Image 1: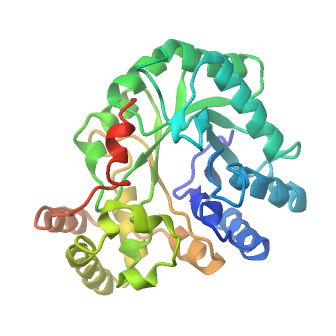
Image 2 (image 1 turned 135 degrees about the vertical axis):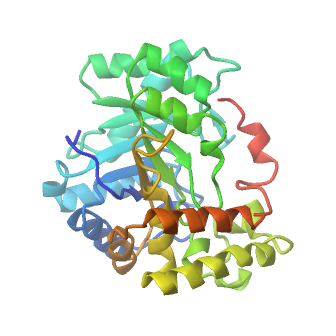
Length: 331
């Protein structure tokens, strides 16, 4: 793993979790821009593919990239989340499942790039003890197959329980101007207690906070956002109020809305109950990657103003697919 963590990471879901995947030429340019601009913690999953593509489409993209640019293999810290059945949208986290998932993931990524951080995309503590799941990841670490363990969308209790078995390097949690739950549910505090870096996924609200999505028709047909609760006909117009305020603030700051939204996420790093917090925006174009990697600093007063702004606005709609949030309470 890299000895230091960057200010910005890179989420790869948007490259392949869609019916029409991003062409390699465009994807490779964005990935090269990420490396060139210091966004060297990359996050992906064994389930980042939609039919007609295989679930491992995201990992196969990485294989093609590192085959083309092997010099980047040592520059990137790769976090892969596996142990997930894409067909049933269910975690599979027994010891045998964890070990088999790692083998599948590493085979898909290929021989050029070693997976640095590995862990389950979701836990299933109702059926499999955390000791068994994380114990299997620890086996891989002890064997030198992977450098560190990671978790995703877990509770504070799971972070603490897992950390007793094996040091956890990273936890991926949704965190943005419209998804602030980790500040109140104990997750941020548990990560700080256990020296776990937080990878803030969807820090731009799946592109909503960039200000470039102003109507539902701006989102391509088949895009996952059409399934999310905050992108529905009855919720989308109401949530535009937040975007308008972000755009106004960004204009005063001399930044883009995306840069402001990312600055707010970064402003939590090593402050209060938060330890290290790294936003991992998932741009698919090189110019957007460069925009996201430009670090904009917020003053204490500006951060407080943004916090007050959030208190004055109610975000409506489920942050995930309506009905799926309950299904994913395996933490």
